[in-house]
Image 1 (cartoon, rainbow, N blue to C red):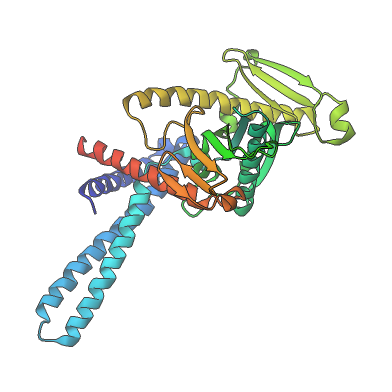
Image 2: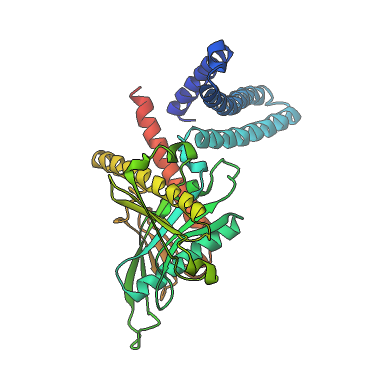
Length: 373
């Protein structure tokens, strides 16, 4: 294990003892919010401490077994036992080391949240709208593979198919590592470029079109209600698209404008104006929070450009080349020749590669911070 990781783990043990003292204090129990946060931190630190204890124990077993092997040169049976214990200890140490590295990667509390995915057609006219529809299908199929629930918040269909704009909400349980929908899809934000022969192209020429994708964590209710109602303009109108007679004859669709920022959110998915308003407020809150986050990220990027990028829509993150059946993620130089499967929702390899790259980047940042500690 790298020295900086061991230093970080030693500090984690000290923090665990500090948390034990804090949780036993009477004033903490009376503050439910603080008590909940400390309890959650204590649970996470306890898991890390448990793995670290196992690691140090297996390291001691390895040293003991290596000493036994030195003493058993003339005892083949004892030497075989020692070699077997050495191999087992090394395997356990490697596994625990890898697990601890993952545990020490700083976690974003938003990773467990549901996510809004906004897909907008960009350059390329009708072909861009068709590609937006393809991306929508790709993400919904990926959600199905993960048994997540999807819900269209708002949509603006294109005349030839696809979408000029569509906003999708995805929710579902976290995985074994505590990563939820936003944690898996957060790196999808940015510019997506497609290269293919459009259905409307009569001469077989390859065209290049683009869409932008923004992935926003769904804020909790406590954050959403902090918006001052006086800063909102709420308009109702008749929804367009599918939905039967009712959805087209009542002003159930809602558009909300945040006057200080000019940010707009709308929802027309539900027949109930009240429920549409609640959903639009969630999207609006997520966009306002993301605006603040992006501004801070831009400041940070001025000092250090991350491997994964800022997630700005202007960032060209990926190219989908249909003639070659190739997907290329430009941030990590990943190229996969299984575009057909990916467009059907087989995004696992892409997302895992991005998570691994981000984890390596965060560990490097942790090492730098530890060395300057």
